[in-house]
Image (cartoon, rainbow, N blue to C red; front, side, top):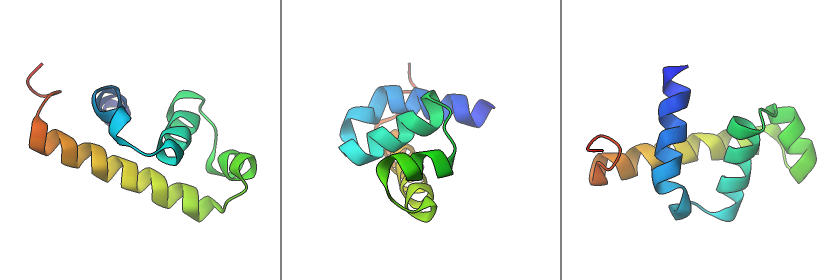
Length: 74
């Protein structure tokens, strides 16, 4: 649970740096609590594409935090 909360906090700081698709998938998964299957049906893409994009988002958010340290230094 702590990892999810941290990821959401990082999104609050750096979410505007993501693409529209990444934002949509992130919000659907973490805020709307939709499953990968539900998101893939809604956006007409594979579950693998959703999973890959969510992993990319996590990696990007971690990268931005490692460089900028806005969350850590709040």
